[in-house]
Image (cartoon, rainbow, N blue to C red):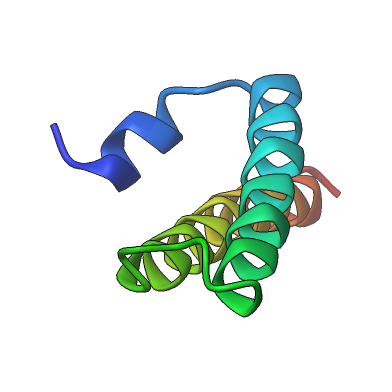
Length: 73
């Protein structure tokens, strides 16, 4: 499975927890990059991409919920 498929299997609470964890990871990676303690600077981009993927899945679910509410009215 790909990363986005793994993310889509999580429920909303798990997604919010994952988002918090990945944002914390991005902060720590950026801090380590600035202090020259990060050997692989690509890790920052990978973590930021994961934040974007989690946010995308959360937004998809919001839109799907709004659409289902419109159809029931």
